[in-house]
Structure formats: C-alpha cells, structure tokens
Length: 310
Image 1 (cartoon, rainbow, N blue to C red):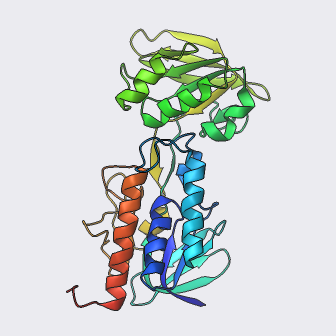
Image 2 (cartoon, rainbow, N blue to C red):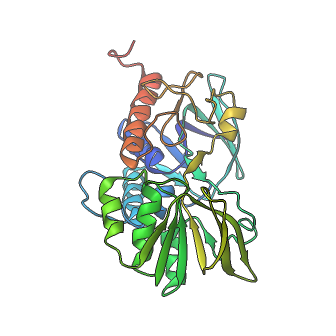
C-alpha cells in the first residue's frame, strides 16, 4: 500500500495541469494513466488555439506538460491501468494492475475515447486502413487516397494534415455543413486535393488484408456507391472513459459524463473530476487545463483546510 495526498487518475491535459498545481501546493502527488502520458491531445497533428502558442503539434504540447509535471516532483506512472477505486471513505483507494494506492483525495481526469461510426467492416479493418488518429497513421498513406469521416474541428484538422501527405482526401459528412471553426473550413476550401461529400455516410468498409474500398450512401437519395480508397480516418467525436468512476459511486449524466459543480467537486467528498470526462459543455485543451487547476486547488483546500475556505 502506497500513500499519497492526492492520486490523479488520467495523465492528459487536465490531469497533468492538476499535478503541477498539487505539487506546487506541497501535496504528495501520484498521476496514473493506462496509456503513455499526454492524453488525446498527443494525437492532434496541430494545435492553433492554445494561448501562447500560435501553432504547435499536439504531441509537443503534451510532452511539455508531462515534462513540467515530472520536473516539479509529481510521480507519473503511465501504462498502469486502474482496475477499481474505493472513494466513499475518508481514505480513498485506487487499485491498478500493479498495486493499491491510498490517498486523501482523488482527481478523476481519464478523458474520453474515440467514437466509432458503426459501419460494417470498421472493427475488422482497425489498424489495417481504419484509423482514429491522423498524425499516428497518416504517414503510412503518402500519395494514397484517403477518407476522413466527420464535420467538427478534429475532422477538419485531420483533413488539413492529411492533405499534405495523401494524393486525395475525401471528407464524408452526414450533414450539409461543417460544425468546425470558420478558419478551419476556409483552409479546407483552399486545398486542391480535398473534396467534400455532404449528407453522406459510410455503409461498409471492404478489403482483403487492407482497406480497398467503401460503400457510401447518400442520405437524401438513398443511393449507394462503392469508392476505391486506401484508408478511412474516423473523426466523429469522443465518449467519456467513466465506467470505473461510475462503478465507484460517482454520479454521471445521461451521456456518461461525471457530474461536477463549479469547483470540480463530485457527489463524493474529497473526489474531484476534470477535463473531457466531466459534464462541462466545452471540450478543449484550454478548458481541461483550467478544470485541472481548479480541481488541484480544491483538493489542497480539502486536505489543508486553509483559513479562506469554509
């Protein structure tokens, strides 16, 4: 059994920001993640809306946060999945694949995972032409024909990134307009090797050892078309990684997000949540950082009970 003032579950933007502030507040801090530290921001080809950086890759920004957190003295364990948590008592326990940790407070910042489109063949061809990360897998498809599915910021950023690698990028969007920032939409319109198919969805992904084609359906006419393609990049949003949190007694909303108040407090005393796993309506790296900082300072206040906190 290892004892900490605070255990932070999740080493993404929210968790690392929380770790920076809990260590600076003098709290013995452990940050755990089931993957490599950095979170989903590591998958972003480019970040253009984080204050102070006009343009930076998601991987570089995540590495800066991780290095900062470790340099200050937080213990960061990656590739250590959490199996269970007991959060109801005065002393909290977090059990991983390695051991069990005790803590006075816990901050949940496990983020989210990529949603699937549910097309036939999607699961079969994961890693063989179906990808959820443009920066991870895009270089494998230089001078090839690829599809990006989605219409939000992530889909547009991935499209712009892939347009510099692939011979042709086709964006498949089930609606008739993007939901992305206007600047991204304008940039896409300037790319000669990008085309957009509106009101369209992928019905099936086909191939042999690799993806070879997709069957598209026009939502208006219901007509189907088979299109030769080398890869499908799915960018249709994310869902919260809240299963263990829910099993531990934390309240979630109808979409699976952990319910928090303005101070990042959950329904259990001494347990806080931050980032994409919460029901905060804005899912951005900047808001994740802010929530992580708030959760950290609230954890400090919960433990130390300073004069300014009632």
